[in-house]
Length: 103
Image (cartoon, rainbow, N blue to C red; front, side, top):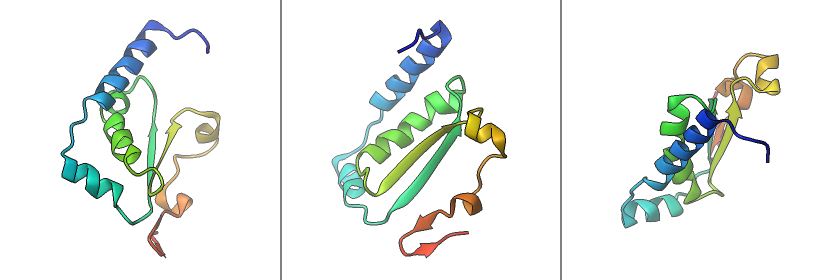
């Protein structure tokens, strides 16, 4: 792994702290584990963004309870793929919920 700059390491630490601090009741965890619908969650951001290291870890923690049904994908805003075209929309991704396509 390459050398990580101090601000980026700090943000990774904040990400991990946010992830670890998510508190859920046993009932909430059980509900997530039994969630029957396939749900696609898309996160777009950069490591330095407060929303990424503050809010995205919460979504990641929720998805971790049912990774077969809650599918989280994270893309960097300025990645080579994202920079070639505009930010993907739901229409681009053809997000599906259960048996119907939501566009």
